[in-house]
Amino acid sequence: MIENGNSISTSSKEIRESLGQIKHYLEKNIRTLSAEVERKDQEINELRSSLEKARLQAEGNSQLMNKLLGELTKLQNDVEWYKLTYEKRSLLGTLRQKLFRK
Image (cartoon, rainbow, N blue to C red):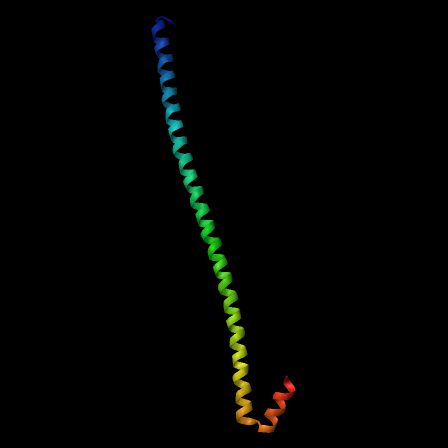
């Protein structure tokens, strides 16, 4: 079967060249994919940072809204007190409430 030693060495040489090309192709793709993974990781970190900032801002806004709602309730109570004081109570009742409340 080994009539021509040249055909065997040529075949081995072609196999080595093919393996070299495959190796080069794989190394190139690995570098490309590694760079893409690094870029995606960086994007993920940026998005996580943005998400954390948005969460903190939403939490701050929620606290501010609760504070404003509390102030609004207090102001509504003050308006009701003034309505009662100046529309329904006598002067003596108003003075008594002022003196004994403090």
